[in-house]
Image (cartoon, rainbow, N blue to C red):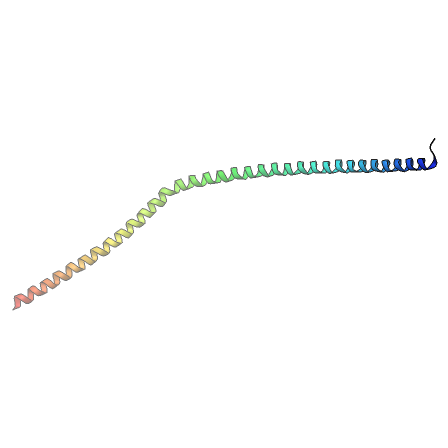
Length: 125
């Protein structure tokens, strides 16, 4: 039979084991709760990422369509712009040619006038 001090030690050991058991159960429950929370967080993050990926994909598709439309528009506008630029250059060239011809005509008229003046002066003497 056990004496009183042995029973007290046994009771104390049982109490310690019970405390350890409760601590392990508490930690296990906390770990399960944290794991469930982490799993829910990962799931929510994954869903947000999938939603973000889908949104970005739609935006990229929309942007691609806009770029295609802009390229089509530019392809249609480009000949008109080229024609306008060519016409502008032609007008500038015509103005320069007109100014050059006017200057040449004035120079020729001046030379002819000077020549006639000299000829008349020569014939008078």
